[in-house]
Length: 265
Image (cartoon, rainbow, N blue to C red; front, side):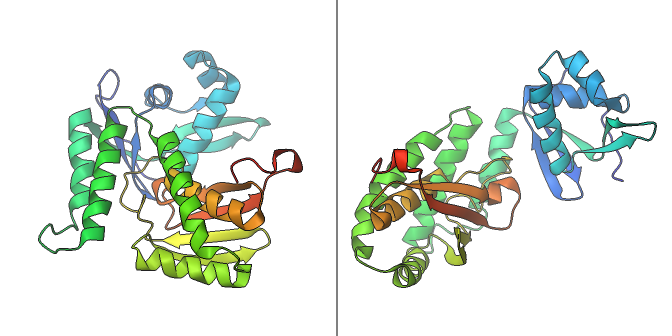
C-alpha cells in the first residue's frame, strides 16, 4: 500500500497532486477533493461519504470509481455485510499546485522535447496546438466541441483522398497518411467492430492526465472519413487515451442506428 501524507490538505487552494502505483495523478474536481478531505481521517463507507458530501449516490459512485481506477483510493468489502464497501486513501499526497504552477509544469512537460531551432514545422505546430489547449484547459475552457467540429470539417476534405477505396485499401492508406503527417502511428485492432489504435497521438500524447478522452479532433476526422465511406453517418467512441493514463488512443467506429443515417455525412 502507498502511504498517505495528507497533512495540510483541507482548505488549501489549487489542485492536489498524488503519487500512486500507476504514476502521478492530479485531482482538481471539488467533489473529489471533498471526498479525499473526508477520507484523510480514515476510511469511510459509501453511505457515509454520500451523507457527508450531500451529493447524489450516483454522482459519488462515479467519482469513487474513477479515484479507485486512478489508484488514488482503494476499497474493501465489509466481511460482515457483503453489500457494504469501505473506501480509503491508497496513495501519497504530495501537495498542492496553484493554477499558475500547474500550467507552468504542464507547459514545461509539453515543450521539453521540442527544439525550436530544429526547423521541424510539424513539431512546431504540434507544440503550438498543445500549448494553446493546455492554457485554455487551465482557464477552465473546454474546446472539445470546437476541436470536434474542426476535425469533422477537415475530415470531409480528407475523405476525398480515400474516395472509392474498399476497406482493405482505405485502412493502410489512412495509416500512411497519419504517419507521413506526424499525426501518430495508426493500426487496426479489429474489423468487427472496426477498432483503430493510434500510438504517439499528436493530439494528446503530451497532455497532462485528464482522466477522460481528449481526442476530439481525431474523433471528428474519423467520423467524417467513415461517414463518407459508409455513405451514412458513422459514430466514433474513444475507449482509451493517453490523457486517461493509457499508452495509446483507441477508437471504435460504427454506423449509427438507421434512424440517424445520413446525418453528418
